[in-house]
Image (tube, rainbow, N blue to C red):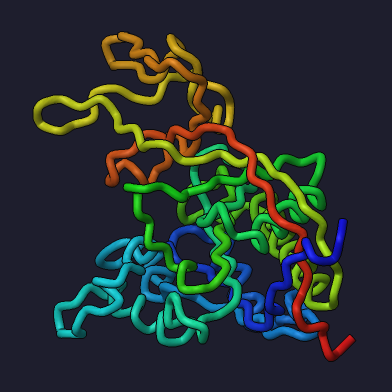
Length: 318
C-alpha cells in the first residue's frame, strides 16, 4: 500500500447525537436525556459531542410526531418554507435544527450526526447508511461491526433514485442512522437501550482514533440496499385485508424467495411472494409504517468498499 493511495479526510470535530426524532422511540430519548445530565461517557478528546432532543413536543406526548414526520421534512422545500402561523410544528423544528447543526449541504454543517431510533420490527442493532460513496462512514460501520462481532449489526443503505427520505440527520456531512429493535412504541427495554449505547460508543471510539491519526486500510462491508417498499393488500376502500404471514413475521434480513408466504387473509388465504431473485425484507410489520402504507421494505445484498483513509490534520491534543 503506497501512501499516494491514502485518501486524506478532514478531522471530525463536531458531532451530535439526536434522540426523540420520533417521540415514542424511547431508547434514544432516555440516552440523550441521560447524556445531557452526565455526558462523560460520550466525550472524546479533540471533538465536541452534543446530545440533542430533536422533537421535544412529541417526546412530551410520547407520540411519533405532532403534525408530520420530522424525519421526512429535511428537503429544500420544507427547509426553505416561509414561517407562518399554521406551518406544521415539525417543519418549523426542522428549520431550527438546520440552523443549529447545518445549514444542510454547507461547509458549516456538523461533521457527524448519530440519529437514534427504535423499530417494532426484529431488526436488531441496525446501522443506516445514506451514501454508498461515503468512505468515512463505511469505515466507521466496518469498525462498529467488528467491535460488536459475533453479534450481527446489519447495514441498511437507503440510497435510492426515487425514494427520498430527507432525514433529520441528513443535515450533517456524515449522517448515521441507528435503528434498534424490536421494541414497542412508548416502551424502553434495557437490552435494546444497551445495544444502542454500544453502537454509539464504538462509533465515537472510531472518530477519536481517526482524529488521532490512525489510518484505516481499504475495507469491504455487506449492506442491504433498499429496492422498494411493499404495501399490504387492500380492498377498494383502501383498507388492509391481509396481515403479515407468521412465517415472515420477525424474519428481518432473512432471504425471501419466489413462492414464500408474505401475507395471510382473515379467510386463511396465503399470498405468496412473486419474484425472480432472492430479496431480504426488513422493517417487517413496523407499527409506524401502517400509515405510510408499508408492510416491509425489500432489499438486496451488495458489497461496498471504502478507500484507505486517514485524518488530514493530526489531533493537536494527542
